[in-house]
Length: 322
Image 1: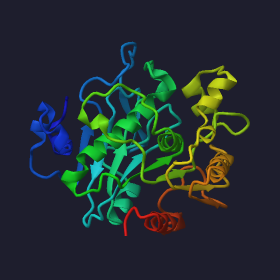
Image 2: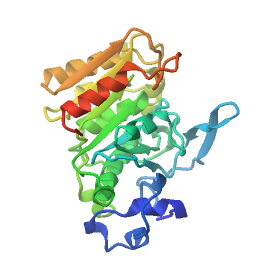
Image 3: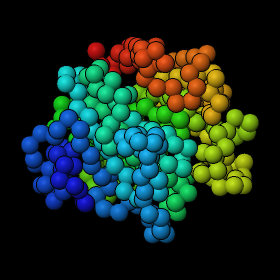
């Protein structure tokens, strides 16, 4: 596994993995507050026809920490440890319209706030469907499933209950998180190590101004094009519409979206809420009057927004942490 020196501590997986060479390297001192690890121990699966070159760009001029990754070939996880861990963890899945992944290796304000609640936070960079991967529109789901398994494999060594791992997705990352929460029973790749024997179902899910449907009239056009190409069939659209594939054992789900979102129609959130309600899945939805796409941790006045307390209460009510 090609790991930078500062990545190794994150790879101390569960006892079932301890005999592998990668884990021998992982028997290091405790990880620092922030660490990074590759998702896959070698080349990511299905890359035989991938010819793209991975790049990183600055999204904000003169701010090297506000970055986005394009043409990802080596997806990774960033781990942030809390000062006072509560025994639970969360996987963060950022957005980017499936054209890029808007994340930063330095971490950001939302993962820092979650760590303040006691959660061990893992932020994910993931591969993109238009780059030639064999899995096509399922390639990000492969990475999300692998991420959940790695977190659970690592959990005992960092004081996390392997069962109590939630997933939060934002914008197009909300589509990845919704599919992770509803298609956890689906095996999307062949196992590569002992971590892949672990479950992928999140304990709970959070969908923030999410892309959900690929059907008209509410599909996010950019995401649909990147996932399915310029002229998808209706069958392809339905296959990638998260609201069409909700099992009764979908984990409890929290949904947040601003009604004035000019990028992803708020009806995406409504469709998912309706689908979850139909299957009697515990779901809580908050549709705010204003906030726009990319509604973050704080408002224009610098105050922490109301969704933070609502999410904290939701997690506690469903037993993710006390």
